[in-house]
Image (cartoon, rainbow, N blue to C red; front, side, top):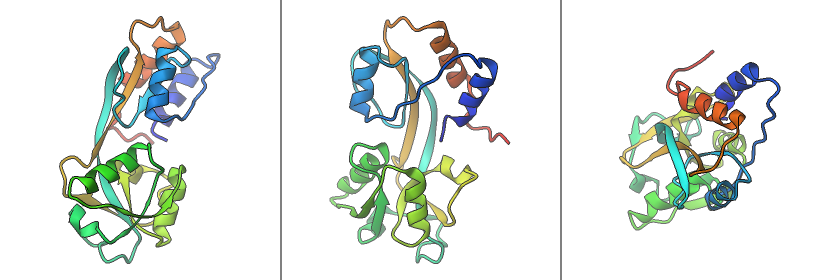
Length: 195
């Protein structure tokens, strides 16, 4: 998970602060922030809603993951048009990676051939590595200790990227703990691998 580093640092510095994590679609995140049901939200897709403030955390390339031995495995880049007939393993509708996949294909008058939808990132990577299909994977996944075997190929499209952003309610009165968490997350050196 992207947040494990800053969460670990925060918990070590503030062991008595209780943290709850919730996974939600972007629309639900916006509603929950405005209703002050949650303090902060990290999103991999834009949340288009009034009443929110935000800070960018990082921007990264999203590439194509293929199993070892796949016809594209030795390539350094691939065009979306070359993927028209490939079977895709991806997330369900509403998830940022599925929105990106659908948008990239629609911009070229194509529809991706989806053979599996999953909410589990590790399951997607495992299913790709077993040869079920190919899929879009963010660059940060390449640095994961639990990375499934396979090849990561750059996608020859300037908009095949994700921007990870921290959101909070505009004018909301964040607790001291929430403000400390916001400072930890926004101050994190996202591009620096930590061991």
